[in-house]
Amino acid sequence: ANPAGILGTGHYVPDKIVTNADLEKMVETSDEWIQSRTGIRERHIAPDGINTSDMCTIAARQALEMAHTKPEEVDMIIVCTLTPDTTIPSTACIVQKNLGAVHAAVFDLYAACSGFVYGAITASQYIESGMCKRVLVIGAEILSRFMDFTDRNTCVLFGDGAGAAVLGPVEQGYGILGADMGADGNGGKYLHIPSSGVAILPTDEARAKHLTYIKMDGKEVYKFAVRVMGRTAEKALERAGLTHEDIDLLVPHQANIRIIQSAAKRLHLPMEKVFVNIDKYANTSGASIPIALDEANHQGCMKKGDIIVLAGFGAGLTWAGLVMKW
Ligand code: ACO
Picture 1: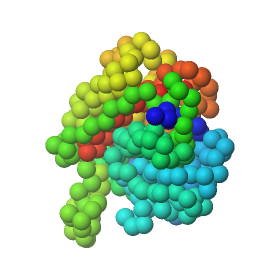
Picture 2 (picture 1 turned 120 degrees about the vertical axis):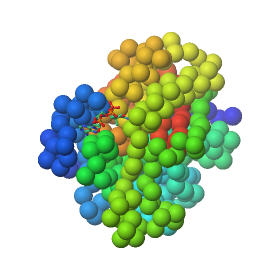
Picture 3 (picture 1 turned 90 degrees about the horizontal axis):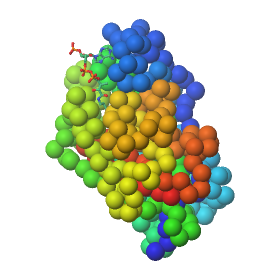
């Protein structure tokens, strides 16, 4: 098999910043509560007129440039999002058109905050089999359009953004060495947008009841996250024939600093080996890991031969982890 690795990364966040102090003016909350319970200081919010595909396109161009890949060389585009521009066409089709990636097979992948890791694992299968040479995996969300700015339990937690990576064949012994993904549909009720598909159409009544917004049982999601985040990383490490002692950098889903700290503890990792940027972006769902990966890349946190672990969890409920040699 051809090992699959990351050849380039990119990210984009909208210019508009909403601070915790801004949210204090909208709901009964405080900067102190938000920072101490979540680690979040501010988030970026997409203005009207900017859609998920626009952010994907910018992040993708950066990743392609770093990977020295022309759009027409891309064999596949996977857009991991729960906030597509439209149900049809898929966001991946819009991005394909924007980039001019005329030879790419394209589709959206739906695994919420685990989406990018699901997408990267999926991409690796096409590369390992030899079917694809260049796969663009993008995680992007405009969660703000589904945020209830009267509900302090959720509106302080999320932000908008996009991150992208180009995957392709790498030298033997490098790239993705082990992976894990899974789901527990029984937990779907803990994090959902009731009126977001065909089950409950967005009627005036649904809107009046705020059913078009994210509903979350924070405590249940927290317990789940603490249970699965370290576990999925451990399973991926085991499949790679490695242990927690081999990890050089953990790039976790950025949902809550306390969840990240508990995963680090389970993996016996000092926080210096964990990449954290939740303070600037909040939880950008499917975009959080690729944004963090691109920032870590630009900050020189990964050197050739390092063992990098990605670990995420999200609505569904879902989880995914992967281990790669950089
Ligand atoms: N400001 C002030 N008070 C608040 C706020 C707020 N923004 N939000 C909730 N509170 C209140 C609650 O109402 C509660 O008050 P009560 O006891 O009077 O009812 C109190 O704070 C304490 O609430 P807890 O739930 O105990 O707070 P906790 O420390 O558990 O933190 C949090 C809550 C941050 C939501 C945490 O549970 C969490 O991070 N859960 C996981 C969320 C998550 O990761 N979601 C994303 C999943 S990924 C995806 O797919 C999108």
